[in-house]
Image 1 (tube, rainbow, N blue to C red):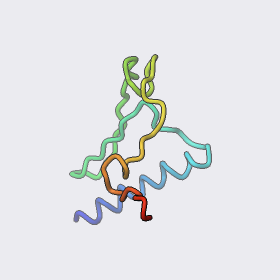
Image 2: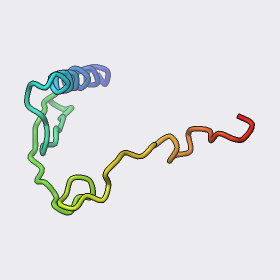
Image 3: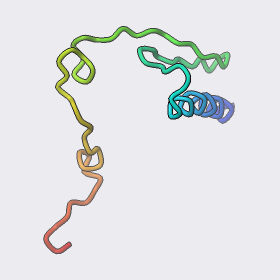
Image 4: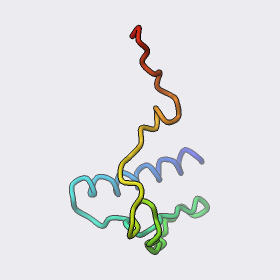
Length: 82
């Protein structure tokens, strides 16, 4: 039963991602996609833009992505021997 739900979410994800890569279709900007596993339905909820958001607000403080592997210390740091 769980695998069936995962497959549904994966298929729907592809339907959303592929048109966005091609520049066609409706983007989910400003929306939250909610999946109800009990009846296998999807629902879109509008989410208002936060003017104080540090990424997309009026005065963004975060302007670039961080290197998560380095931040989480998952990548070995280069030493003088390497």
